[in-house]
Image 1 (cartoon, rainbow, N blue to C red):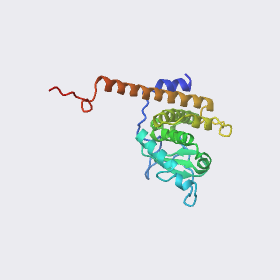
Image 2 (image 1 turned 120 degrees about the vertical axis):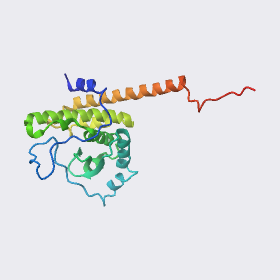
Image 3 (image 1 turned 135 degrees about the vertical axis):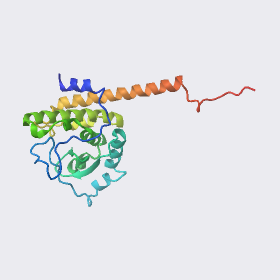
Length: 235
């Protein structure tokens, strides 16, 4: 079964509101050393306090601030977004999304693209997929396979979340399929497959949204709200 077919088969039961980011390992003085894991180390934070372009973007009414509220409202996951160096974006186990400042400087005028990147990372925040595995018990090939599946699920989640938020997925897809972005790695499916997954998930959520709106209209037509009905007085 192809990754796109797997996504199509699981979309119906795939909630937009989950609880935890994926993660592994124990904490405390008796915890064993963590040798293997499913994620990468968090990138260094970027100081934007004196950056006239980036600082307003992270303000409450700035691009990142507005997108953050939409992500929270649409997913039920609070999360937080911080500026970072050396990445486009990534997420950690503490519900933090690290948004690359170089990426944001280049794409801050393409809201659909920034929304798409953040929606993908929000997919990691809500994911519980990797929690059922202990990376220390697995071979590296199996870890790579699990990470690829996790990225696939995050792509599908991004497609659905973008539809719910009212954004176009093509901004994210253009970035993923751009020659400068393509890279050979076991972590992701090929860009063309990722694009297909995002589109399939986006269309599935849009169809669901349209059906829900039609059902609401039908219900209001057949069962009108008595508080809004007009009565004709008969003397």
